[in-house]
Image 1 (cartoon, rainbow, N blue to C red):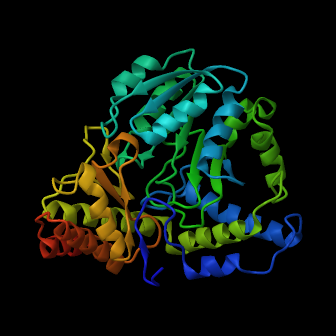
Image 2: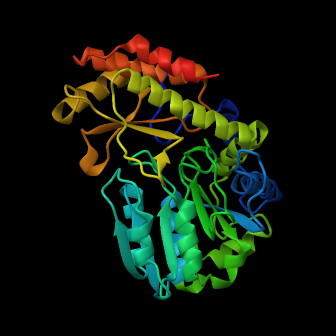
Length: 390
């Protein structure tokens, strides 16, 4: 692989040199004081990310605990649901993309689940969710930033519905936490989940969740899978440990990545991600391309992931040739998932991208389109993207 290969797919994202170096340090026991120091450092910085993800940097949590899990975010999704309704209950799952559907599929293994579904890429109709959430609802699940479609969903409005019904609210913040605004208490979130390999810019293999103090009394670890007993995880976290063998190099990498976020500061990080996402959109729109998701008064374009409709000449069976042309230029982007394959492409700006890398992404996509016969103005696109960047 060429040294300047650029990952612009929505995870794993590029990791910093110091993160890679931290992972290569000599091995230690996961029950050693050395590892406990790593866990404590990672948890401290993750607390900052979960609690201070606002444009001002102000805290939005009255109290909670960051947990690091030896598994990707799907493990965190299952752990949250299973610990809250593992012995049965009623869940309302909001679905308008692949990961909302995944949350629903997880919930259906543990509870009577009502899906409030919309076409992928369509915005959430909050009134439709309100019709489904009621006094018998135990948990509401929702994806904040739907990675399959590039849509930012109305977490706050749905959180109000969950609170009014007395239901617990579990939010997938996998591709927003660490890169965009996230307000725990203001949005009524009881459990928030994120993934190491996304906006945290750490290697894949771990996930993190934030468990608010208020929800702890509702957790039932014995009803959950043995590996995902959150009562047990919370007890072990008090001594900077996990219940089982920890992936030591991955924890080191996550600690370093989270430290980088704190050094940058969440206000600056949020502003940078928003600016870079807008730059990608402006560049692609200037080429005559269209954003995929539709918006309403409650939805916005993602600030960490841009989804664009593929134009004629690069759609359907022709999409593979376009993707190959991008890859040949040392850049990796993603196509559509499931039935959206051949319809859209997706570009991530999660992590630590530079201005030069964003512009390279825009230029590469434009050049690849021209190679496969799609008439776009590459220089105009790059110029529009550059104008948006500081």
